Structure formats: structure tokens, C-alpha cells
Image (tube, rainbow, N blue to C red; front, side, top):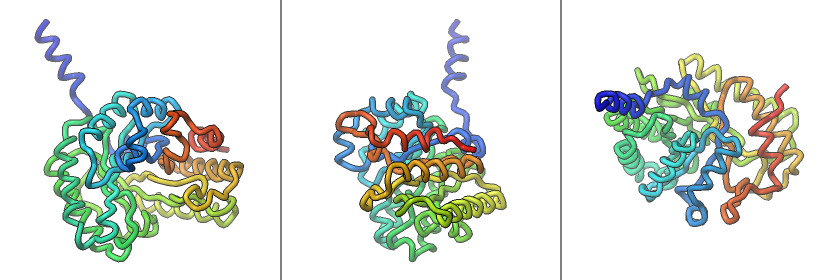
Length: 303
């Protein structure tokens, strides 16, 4: 009986790693969340909110964090996500690094060493997005960005050999900058994070925007295929919520359905930006105004 118990323990405690191909399939539709970043949301957020995101239809969450993250709080968030079957992607904000790359590169490398050591034994559903968005002053220092990736990946791999790591191209994760991105050699667990329209469309969807969306998807997919890599679109927004919120709801729905279907047709998973735009952490309820927009990117009717 004891021997059987030991065998069952090892069977259920053993965590299988995922290939990028399989992990890409598992990610599904995700959403960016600030449960471990912004004080206002941290104060109102409770672990039961994670259940709400899973029940609403999300497969994954892109959890933003920074250098001053409360690791004990992050522990609880990750554990609850894994318990609820919600894939957690830890995404480093790197605010200081993006504003002053020369000064804070070592700090950015070090935080990933801390994270890697802390979560090395967690299930491989957990993945790491090494920099949420290469923008601000890092845009002018692609060599420093690539140097950061090289050092961070090397340090993580000393600790954790098979965890999925996401690397993003410069200029706000612009797919057209993929050919300038450092890619580690002989590492079978690297994926690409790229995105567009992270702050949403500025106007109603038109033919020019459709071409832009389709062209970027085509370019990113072709580039990844030529390099034997798989990708994920880590952030896009259905409306210009941070810049006046002037795009009408009906237009947000059209944009969300078109972009979602375009990505789905190319088997590219995505995460929408951001949770607080659709979920009220004060009432712990989904915002009624955006229910149809939510459905448009969660359950698009693709032709």
C-alpha cells in the first residue's frame, strides 16, 4: 500500500514541460492584468476574481509585475491561477529599464534570476514574458535590449531548463523588428511575443486598418516559421480606452471580431489589454457596457 502511494505521488506531482507548439495551443484567449502591479487594483483585487476570469472564458492571464513586486502576493496569484486552470504568464514591466536602459539593465536581469529561483518547481503552465513592451528609451538601444535578453535567458536556463520564455522585438513589440531580435541558439523553449494596437484603434475599422492587421500577422507568422518559432500576441485593445474612448461600442465589436478572427485563422493566440477596462474590481463584476465587446474577442463569429 505504501509503495502504491509513493508511485501515485510521483505520478501526480510530476510536471511535464510543453513544447512551444503545444503551449501556443494552450494559451487560447488571454487578458492582461495588473493584480501584482498597480496599487489601486492590488488593493481591491481578491483571489476569487481569478475564478471570475476563468468562468468568463479566458484561458490565460498576462500578469504584469515590476522590480518592487510583492513575491508572497505573487505566489498566491500564481497558485490560484494554476488551481483554477488559468495559464499564468509572468510579464516584466521593467519600467526603470525601459526609461533608462544603461542604468537598469543589470537590475532587469537580476529580477528574472529571483523569479526563476522562486518558481523553478512550479508546473510548466507558468511561463515568463521577459519584457512587457520594449518602448520608451529602450527603442533607441536595441543592442542593450538584446544584451538583456541574452543575459536573462542564460541566467534563467542555469536554474530552469524547460520553462517557456517569451522574447519581444523592439519598437513596442513591433513584428517588423523581429529580424533585429536576439534568439538563443539550441533552446527549444523560446517563443515570440509581438503585438499591435495595444492602445486600441483611433477610429472605426476601415480597409487600411484591415490591411495593416493582415500584413503584420502574415509577416510575423512567416518570420516565425522561417526560424522554427511560435508566437503569441500579448496585447491589443478593442477601443482607445486610454485616449478618450471615442470609438463607439459597435465599432469596437467590429474591430475585436476582425482582429480575433484574423489571428485565429493563423493559429496565433492572443491576450487583450486590459482587465480593468472590462472588470470592476470594486464590485467584483464584469462591466455591463462592454459585455458584447468581451464576447467579440472571446467568442468571435469567424467566417
